[in-house]
Length: 349
Image 1 (cartoon, rainbow, N blue to C red):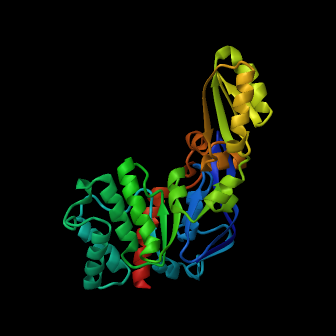
Image 2: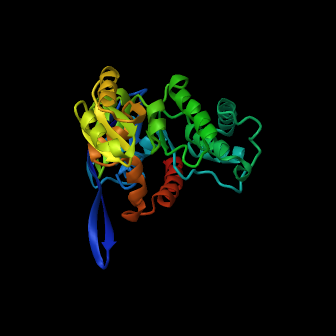
Image 3: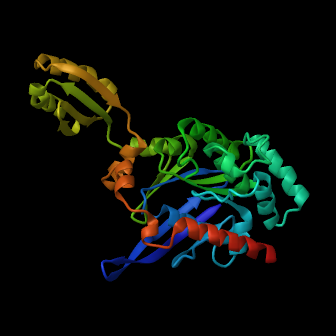
């Protein structure tokens, strides 16, 4: 469904008074099978939004090739846009029109008749729990309702491939969980292929068949969540001890763990097969006279995977890195403007 080889995108940015060339995407190879749900992870500035924009024909690659839904993103861009659904992070609905009017206009841009769009739009409203909101203005909807309306807009022409860019950003936990159910049903009930960019690790874990991690413009991992976690060497064991027992506790933990660290009264390290090792460790700690306050054992997470692969936590990277728009054109406004222009081009084509 998606095949990319050697995708490159370069932007110009200013460092002081000097211009600097930045490779936002640096030779990306990517494959997505039909019916697969792929989670695309990476910090801000890693290249995920730029990659998404190239795959959706909103940005022309500087180098490399990509086919989406069987069409070349450069030579057959109109066919690509007719075959995909795209839900941007910022959303694409106007606050001054009724929800149904937005859906009607969007569907008719794809060449569907008014009757076809209305029938399909109202079916999607029911499926996405938007019953009774056809006449409501988006500005009077909740955040979760507006995001589901965005998804209706992306699905109105029955695409075989759906791109979702940070679909749950800004939603409360209940609205996020609700939207997860709808995203999961895109594949299970509609047979759609879903390409999902997100910075929520639990979201990628829950929804994706496979996780792809991009960092500094390059793909650094691509596998199932379980397989990626298995690459992290061991469970994280954390001991909470009395302040004057930290050194002894660290020495005991070091006999069974890797990379032992201390922070205040906590001692932690990675332990292979912790379930088998911890009972013996507790006996050794007790025999050494260490006053143990608590012990915690955590299985590896996707954030641990990211830390292992890149040397930094994804959450830390999100807070430290600048957004991709700092090195390129404004991603959201450019994407929305280009999308509208291209939709009109599709009709004329």
